[in-house]
Amino acid sequence: MENLLKVAMAQIAPVWLDKKATLEKIKQTVIEASNENVELVVFGEALLPGYPFWLALTDGAKWDLKVNKEIHAHYTRNAIQIEAGELDSLCALSKEKNIAIYLGIMERAKNRGGHSLYCSLVYINQNGEIKSVHRKLQPTYDERLTWAPGDGNGLQVHNLKRFTVGGLNCWENWMPLPRTALYGLGENLHIAVWPGSDYNTKDITRFIARESRSYVISVSSLMKKEDFPAHTPHIDKIVKESPEVLANGGSCIAGPDGEWLVEPVLHKEGLIYQSLDFNRVYEERQNFDVVGHYSRPDVTKLTVNRERQSTVHFTD
Image (cartoon, rainbow, N blue to C red; front, side, top):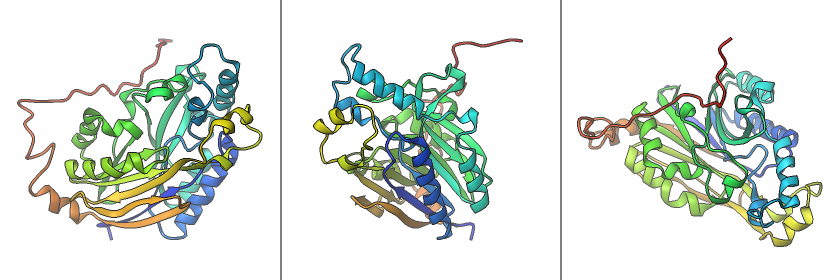
């Protein structure tokens, strides 16, 4: 039925900072979801190859600290360059299984020189095509020590059955103007990806759903102290200061009325399933539509620059 969409939240831990092993884990999760007739599977922020937890554990803001430079270099080597075909096998699997994917990656963007890292949210459609790569607009706090700020090019939405789906990374979801940009494109299924904490998901998920009268899927990753691979550079320093749990999950889904369909799930690794009924969107838009009948574009209006930013423009 076009009205119904079966989704899965992939609340999993990465094989931290190991892109090949993490990608294989992601592909196995996609296969598992497809076996349950899932049409959209969502993974957490920066899952491939992992969130930069070391920054809070190794005096990350100290200038010229060899430890942080060496871990950053390891992180960069394990980041994803889409132009080099590093997501091709996942795209092929998406097409084979007829399943759409939202995936948080660390992107080593070729059009920005290929050395800086962007926290990017990639959408792969059911035909295995990458339709948008949204680079996080503003890295948060210590993330700025290793991630570069993105641009508006990825503020895109996509048709999936009767739904219009779009997404943002982590604290971008607290930014009203990027949210509004997606609402204005007709979004009614909002994807919010997080590194992993119910502290982040328990309030904003229901708020966005109630504000937009849309479904909101918040997907978080997991990470425990024991998940740090032994071959990680300076692993002794990392685990010495690490808490036992760095990311406890908190993946959840709110309906267009702002009420829970799936309350935040903690400390549980695996797929979490839910079917969404599009008709609920129309029901809740009856009395409030933030960019429709309850808006005043003659008074307030948003302008969005979606140009992909690059330092150099070549005219050959």
